[in-house]
Image 1 (cartoon, rainbow, N blue to C red):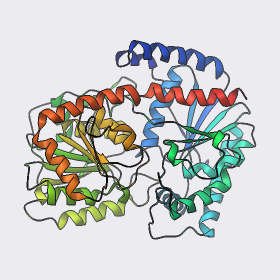
Image 2: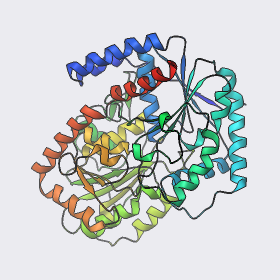
Image 3: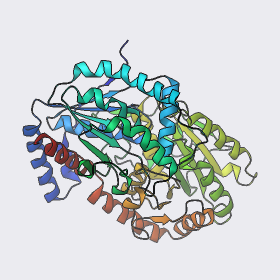
Length: 473
């Protein structure tokens, strides 16, 4: 059985951006499309990663490749497969790249598992490639494919979505493990310049900031009654005024939320209750328990707000083997909350069978929120921040990684210097809940910033400029 999973990506018309871009930016997008079709004619742009759902990379690929195909570029997506031991190793690499010590070590047996898994995937990928193709390998899971792909004559770009501004012993350990496989890559792409590793050829390093798709089910407009209906159907919100739990799929067809979330709560959220929300994977680096403690000790006593912590169904993300255990830890911490606070905290593991249905629920949660939090201890970029900003929600987030590129502190959100300072997190949230006018001003500025810097056309342009430069060598 082939190990690679070929993802079907539908074409999306990029001309839709005429409704959200300035006239100048839209003209530049049309010129980019014309040049890309000419330069990339007869080339296939392959993207290779390790999961098709449950993470920011999968969401980026689904939209970016859709727009590339809609513009006339042959862009394709394949997902590697592996046994649990492989993903345990790559999760450790992911943690290490963030500088996080998860209590384990990288051993030679891990390297053997890594190499054997990628050799099996390479055996399926290599026959599909041609010398003028471009292959973009995403994150630690795919780095070991570089040599096999390069031998086909294809151009190889390794794209790392995670990193650390100030490297430590753990991050350097991950670099040493992965650098073995990356010497022949034509380019290395990072989300921030400070994420680029020591010892890499500086001439081969590019910085490309991630983006959101303004028209995807996760970010498309929702009327308030629509958001409430979706949250009611998902089992998060108590029955409210009648509404349709519907959304529009990426291909323009109608969709409906039919599946409920796995919700841990003492009572359903009331529709008129102020709401604080964090949406993220169930990952210790996202610190869901820390968010809960900040709410319990520094927010609940000063406001009538409730808290929702939401993430994907705990066992649904193949390349994140820690998700189920972190969700279980979060549930145990919820059970320890006082009787006065526990009914105001809601844990929602969102269904992942239909990725667009999941996205519509996330959209509804972010739009229903009064304040969105992203209290990560480490972060590559943090697409949930840009998503909430696009919806004009004030965001309180850690001043780390790519989050600090998105938010201008005090203008388009609030940055927390030390994410472990729960009192400061709580004070920032309480201030926004207590001053709705100020919160609305921040939300409006947040949307403008995303429109200027973090929409898909800018992201596509950066990739094309890099590919064009490599193709001309």
